[in-house]
Length: 140
Image (cartoon, rainbow, N blue to C red; front, top):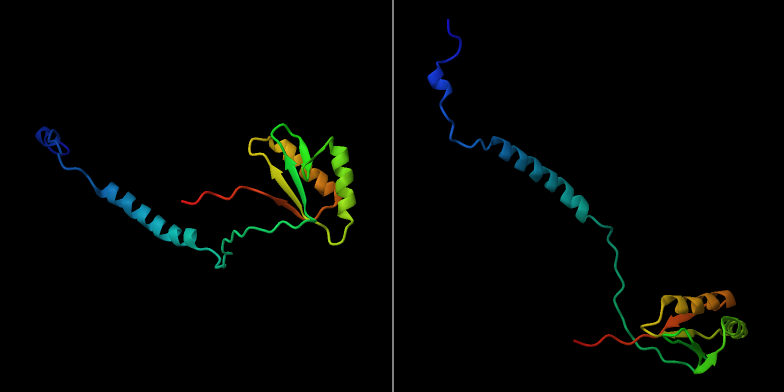
């Protein structure tokens, strides 16, 4: 008694590629992308501010602090000996009404630590307006 087909039928090679699993996977991926793309693109509608780069006029009462690459601090072109002297000068300026703006000119090659110490001194003195002076980007 033989169950099934003959041995000749079993040895037959199927040369066709079964594309059903491939189509199934592609359909699943298509459905996933169709569902997730609107969620990823959905944002809250806000009007972003437009970029304006207007040079500011330096007022005579503004304080210009320069930080060199070596960490030296200059107050309107006069060298400050240490952070204590800088803090004392900033505290005298902080009580003036209206309070002048402190503009920091940091050397591009200076360590951030040196500029950070100047900012910390301004915060401790109670200076509310701190600005950074930079080179404008090149055109083109």
